[in-house]
Length: 263
View 1 (cartoon, rainbow, N blue to C red):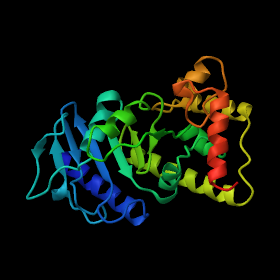
View 2: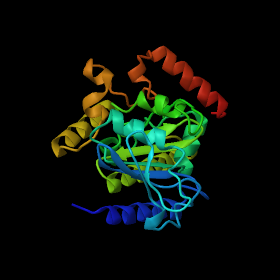
View 3: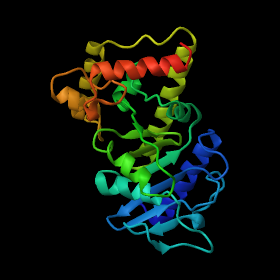
View 4: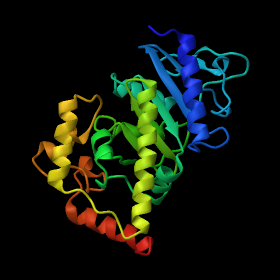
């Protein structure tokens, strides 16, 4: 079993990665890791994620209350969001919140990442919906995120950034990296004529590959409410299938977004 000091070092390493890759600026972002049902390590507030050392890392309980913190370090102001993920998803062992440039751009534009454009993204992420805007450090963001936790392993945060979570820290980070890569590819393809999406049958074949791999987490391949009803998967439904939005509504929303973009 990895000891706490080694986990703190891993948190610092991942913090440096997201900082070096431009996924956060200044003191943005936060990371946490679950030790057990009542102990969690997390990054402190007001500190650049690119310059942390193990003594910076705080320990909190399941309610976000401080169990251990050195000096003037205090847990991330977004710890409520992390705790909601752990509460709703017992399978999650780590959470990463960042502001990756392209993914956050889509979150600001109100465009979820649902277009099936790349096999790897379809298999690993499925869809990345947008959680409604909430004021940072309040219960508004946890409440918004909670709606999507049982069906997705990553969400965009409206006008804010992105959130990813997985069974361990490295996988949670990789989810964040994949979200940003997906968003960047989608953005680029939109500039050169628009993406050619994979067909529904191609998507379903990729879903089957994911099931054969036995990949962990929540994914539309198994959990999309539309798919469970024998309807097309959430790919292409603008991330609203879990709210029962009909096709006419989705088409109108898409039309309005495209009009705003001048398309």
